[in-house]
Structure formats: C-alpha cells, structure tokens
Length: 277
Figure (cartoon, rainbow, N blue to C red):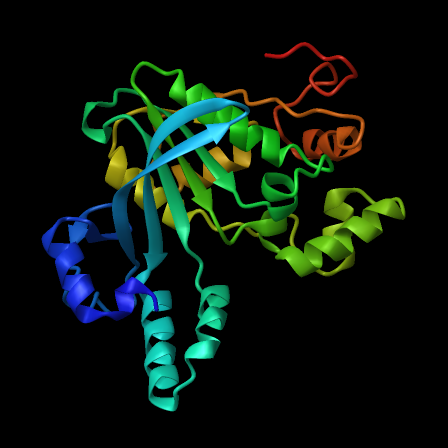
C-alpha cells in the first residue's frame, strides 16, 4: 500500500515538514486543502537521505519525490475502489499511471549560490539498461558527479514522463527500428506522426522556482530549446554549461542529428577520440 493513501501517515508527514505542496511559481500552498481548480499543484515528499554510488564514487544526496496533485487524486480514487473490491493484487498497476518526478539534492538549497543543475529526461534504455544508442546514461552519471564536486552543490531533476523526448517507451522502440532502416531520430518521430520533441518542463520549472527562486543557476545541457522552455516559465537567469559525455560509435549518428537539430555540439565533440570538455 502506498503511504500517501493512509490519511494518518499523510498527516504525520505534513506535520513533520516532509510533505509539502507547491504551485507553478514554486511557492508553498496548503497540503491539506484541495488545490485551486485548474491550477498546477505539485506534492513534494522529502528530503529523504539517499546515498548513491556511481562508477565507484559515493554521492550523498537528498531525494525529493514529486507528483502533480491531479494525478495523485486519480490514483487515490482508484486505490479506494480497489480496496472496496478487495483488489489489492491490482495495486501494482497504479504505479504505471503515476508520473513521479524526482529531485536529487546535493548540499543545502538555502545556502546555494549559482548552483549547478541538471534537468534529466528519463531514459530506461540508457539510464538503466546502459544502452549506447544514446548518451543519457553517461550524462546522468557525469551530472551527479560534477554537481557533487561543486563547492556549493546543486541538484538533478529527473523527469519521469520524458522517455524518447516525450513519446513513450513503446513508440521509442518503434523509432529505433526506423532508425536502423536509415532514418535519423527526428525523422523516425515524424514517420510515426509524432513531434520532434514533446517534453513538458512545467513541473521542472515549478521545482526550480521552489528550490532556486529567481536566483541565477547553471544548467548542464547542450540543448538551447530546454533553456528557452525554462525561460518561458520565468526562469531567465540561466547559464548553459556544456555536458558532453558518452560519445561512442553506436550513438555518433544520433548525436549528429541532435547537432543538426540545434544542439550545441560540434563536429569535434562527436568525432572519434574527441577530447573531453
């Protein structure tokens, strides 16, 4: 049973400051009253001590799990129905419809000045399977390691609904077959009738407003569109930091397509034996 389905546990988490709710501007709002109709409200659970070990390096992070109130309400209603029907064995299906984003915080947010930030899109094949068809797994590992080396710390925001630039894992698998037949990653999306990039950074922006506010921060990215998208949510004092890693013979053509689409990548960046930035 998910802890947020137990009202007593929920109240205890709120009382201990471990469960809060924020709006699109990152401001705290009531976690006990229903959020205003039609307005974005995000539940933030944490901080939770989460030591991480990547490539033999231990990194002490504080984990925040976040989810939109609208999604949570739907799942809680379904869970109540399952309880009444005695369908506890079906509870595992609830997780599949709940997009839980995460924040991995390194250091104390209140003390950060111009922190280093990574907004990382979920990639099961790269982050978990270790696929070399993209550079996502190495980018995730390198981002946490770079943030860990920062004197002032920073954070990684992990966006769970971004698989395949927002098209989902099943469609992503289909695009891989189309790519193997000669199309590049963007052409394959279009063949399926899907956008080049359908990722939504609304929640990431709200979390950055909450943890960073209007203060400047540095963003690990090669994608100017990601910066423009965050700018549109009022986050305007962003300094891009090149984040090139994980280049291999398997993903060089994929990276070339990203370069041609607008990513800040040069021929040298994706060349064989390219020097690390």
